[in-house]
Image (cartoon, rainbow, N blue to C red; front, side, top):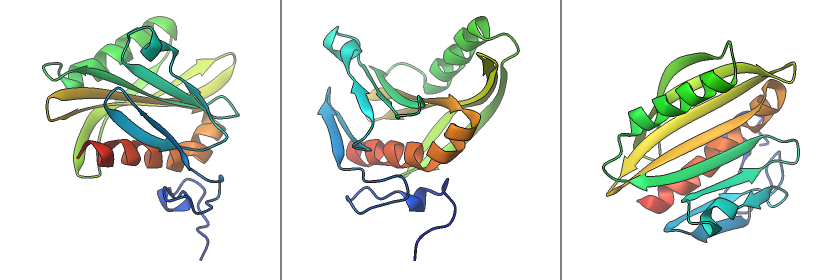
Length: 166
């Protein structure tokens, strides 16, 4: 049975079977992390090439999912709060709400964000999580309508990342 809610994570398969937004067979595997992402998205690992430990994947419509790697001593909640403060400086009127969730057995702490950019309303989420000796920051953003369509894809990508971390 095909899921009817396009934002449902069940709509997106990580094993290569077709989901509502297409296939997810593309895989990033570097910097000690791996995750799957839709084959029609664009991977930007230029920060990793420059020695920064982050990678971003862009949808054809401009929404994106990003992961950054930090030392294990970094506090996930403080990293997420720092992202919010940086975003507030960039986007006046940014609204933020604390949000925690559990994915693949890991508790992620962070914020849900809403703001205007180029006269469009945008949604973003930032989450931090510590696994073993490393802390990760995950950031997803998109124009509201695209974000809602991509929410399940973002969740599937985050799940594939966290499952790979153990």
